[in-house]
Amino acid sequence: MKKVILITCCLFLISILHAQDKFFTKTGQLHFDATTKSSPTTIEGKHKSVVAVLDIKTGNLQFSILMKSFLFKQALMEEHFNENYVESDKYPKCEFKGLVLNNVDVNYTKDGSYNAKVKGTLMMHGVTKEIETTGKVIIKEGKPQLKAIFSITLTDYNISIPNLVSDEISRVATIDLDCNLEPLKK
Amino acid sequence: MKKIFTFFTLLILFNTYSWAQEDLLSQIKLDSAKKEYVKSAFKSPRVIMSHSIEFLNPGTMDFRILHRFGTLDQGYKNFYGLDQASMRLGFDFGIKRNLMVGVGRSTYKKEVDVYAKYAPLQQTTDNKMPITLALVSGMTMNTSPWQNPNQKNFFTSRLGYYFQAIAGRKINSKLTLQIAPTLVHTNLVVYDFQDNNVFALGIGGRYKVSKRIAITCDYYHNFNGLQEGITYDPLSVGVDIETGGHVFQLHFSNATGMNERAFINETYGRWGKGEIRWGFNLSRIFQITKRKKNSW
Image (cartoon, rainbow over all chains, first blue to last red; front, top):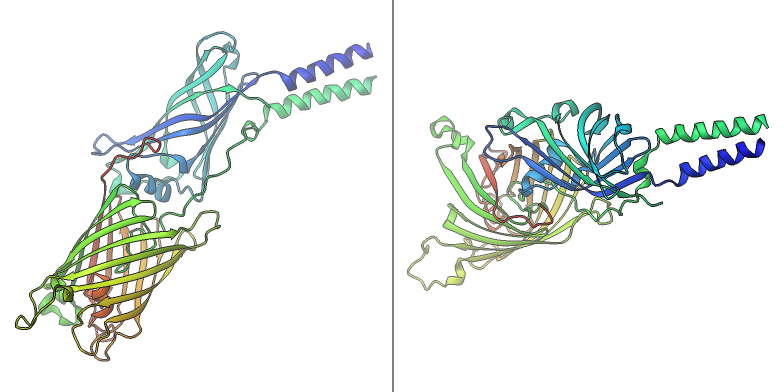
């Protein structure tokens, strides 16, 4: 009896520690657009090195974005983004920590596209807020791809948009996220 | 037996618990941070009159319109100097992270000036390089008619040169200071008491009072080119206002000249006597080349 329990426990522990249940990327893509309808120029930025980790067992999902690495078509816009809006020297990172709420509905072993509900906290510009959105988990050859389009209100994160540019820069930014995950090897 | 069982149960519970709260991001080995240069030390590549340690982004052009009005002490009859205006039109180009060139033409003496600014050292965010050192080399050409057309005049008499080494540091996100030892060489000077080679030391700085507004100050001490009662050290105090695409530099100054030769050698006003001018620099930045693939 004693031995059985011990062995079961050990096996359980080993299975927890060694199963391939984590997937990650360091090259996730993110695009944001905060252009108003009346704006003559597009206010958009791209990010090509989003860090994302997904634990398929628990549905734990985390993202980290280095604010300085956003790229813009105009160099001056990039400078102003960092200097005047997100203040990337003071707040270098944006992080999301959350859960895939319907993780059980996603069959990670079978190719296909699954709808995912995600809820968690988004920390940006020194402000942490709960957000909830829907996205897609696309399984291809055993690897998940995460896709989501959602919007955030910049003023919620104390990112103020002066009146002078409020006819160009929208208070709501649309975010388009696309991450191809690979198995995380320890 | 019971103890072992409880121990393992707790261990499993703890394990699953810690697992739910796990910081997944910490398990990713991130590439060590790249060397990063300090940006936005000034809102513009010029403090007010003089070059700053700030460079234009590569592929951008700065179109600058500079105005200096008449002296304030002229009173209401000349609308405190606003009836007279002297200007400089300029085009500055960012070529590399640490290299820019520019050309301009001033009303004063119908002078054309060109310059190149290069930074062999640039301040980094990790403070391994604590300062930016920028070297400026410029040339001015007076294109107004000869003052004495009857004598033999040489083309080289129109030319002047200036060389600067600007050392500065963005001390924190608000405060930037710089010093600029400068040599101005003028081939033909206006007065015989003037030296062809003039040494000056510039001190400039800015203090940001809000995200888009900064107070600026720009001063040169002229060591050997001043004549008492005629020429003085130039001092400008102003406000930088950034509105997105434009930077407005509004200021008061005792100098009319808008290139190094002119404001170091030929500043005729005195602050103490109200011989101050209102002036503004308007800077508009254009992206003139497409950014590289890896950047957009």
